Image 1 (cartoon, rainbow, N blue to C red):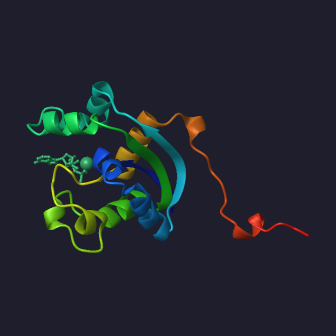
Image 2: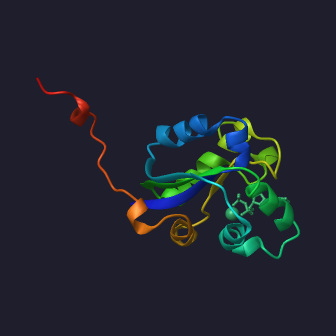
Amino acid sequence: MADRTLVLLKPDTLQRGLAGRIISRLEDRGMQIVGMKLMQMDMDLAKQHYAEHVEKGFFKGLSSFMTSSPIIAMAIEGNNAAAAVRACMGETDPQKSLPGTIRGDMAQDLGRNLIHGSDSPESAAREIAIFFKPEELLSYERDTQRWITEA
Ligand code: IDP
Ligand code: MG
């Protein structure tokens, strides 16, 4: 069933100029972008988004990194979107990620793993609501024939 998940292209993705290639991988899988914005996280947003990690030792480094430079937030629609995006991403630690995954092909470091994807449909609903207003999410059909100019 088609549903939605939140993807964040983290600051390292934009710093390294990998946004297009990472978005392409999600599009190649058949995922559809239904919301997208370039933005810079602030500390309040980092605490809200990473609420489950706020008390952890790595939160200081994680939050300072996530607020250090712009990110791209995307709402992505697809079949079991959260699980499908996570499969494309690989493991949290790029060192444990298989080649063929985004982190396994393009990252080396746990703290610089390029992409966030919601870990469940419930997390996806919570996280999408943090980053997008309802009117910023657009449903549309993809029909290549529509773009052919009629004579
Ligand atoms: P996820 O991004 O694969 O869902 P989470 O466990 O939710 O992984 O952790 C959020 C982010 O925090 C990770 O993507 C990673 O960048 C960072 N992180 C997680 N665990 C550690 C750690 O033990 N040390 C440093 N950074 C960590
Ligand atoms: Mg997570």
